[in-house]
Image 1 (tube, rainbow, N blue to C red):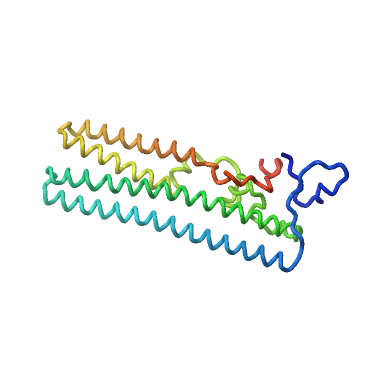
Image 2 (image 1 turned 45 degrees about the vertical axis):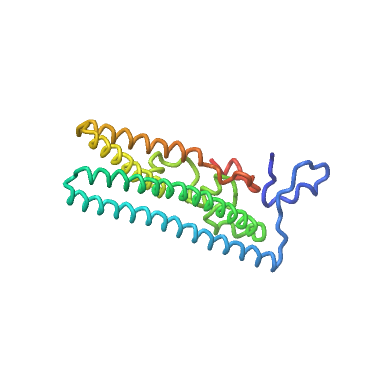
Length: 241
């Protein structure tokens, strides 16, 4: 569907026009107050989202640190005997579950954040309809499609680096959590007297399997923030290059 330019007059007012109208903002004091209030509301919501993301990550790291300390104490007391193995095989899967829950929630938080950025981009578009001469002073996007949300979030448009999934908060937690999965597999193999070599192989296989599952799952989540909310102001082709 072809969308009219933002500053172009309402296309439905033209004789014989068949294109749908782009949402237009009527100038007025109340209009600006409502837009400003909504803008600040979205900013506050984004702040809460970031706070929750950092809190959930901190809880996982704290739980993992506590588990490592507990395992060290038990290992010292049991000399890495059956008591240590049993304790580790009970504790580490719980830590892994906490990490998995953290990754899922961080992904949800990212989708929520993208939704709020989309709303702020729409409001920014309304600002520029009211005062188009201010466009040179805006460094974030006024378009509410995927490219516009990405530009407002990371400050650029284009393909992300290949290493980006591993430097984001969910990626870091996924890597650490996969190490926990590998540790569980390695300890289980040692309990079965399979030797150090097979224990390391099993640990590596479980690590790779865990990180691969997280990557496949994350790939399916990319772009879902626009589900059920079609862009009203898509980025023009010349701006998206």
